[in-house]
Length: 129
Image (cartoon, rainbow, N blue to C red; front, side, top):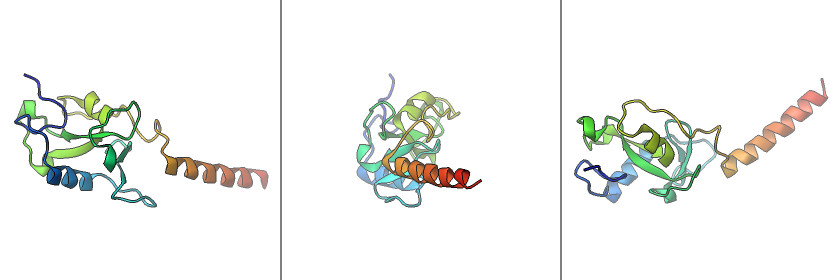
């Protein structure tokens, strides 16, 4: 029988303290609130409030077993990571993480502002050449 997503090796939902610990392992982003927003190993934006949510190209995330349970992986924290949900589904029971969603494919509100600032700077620099 296949385990559901966001479950431990016994098929139980992860406890809140485990969810928090895995969240804290995700990459922080300068200029953002690390309690609310982080990035997964692919660079995809994830939001703490969207744990378990599965909106296409959204900021929902799941807990992934780096070394899959079906291949002998454990529930120890060093074997768990936060992945944007589509990246987790793409990885499945593989050892290899193939990034389906990365920062290039997502536009997060902070990224939109940064892109506008960069565009303005580039326009200014190019106009003075």
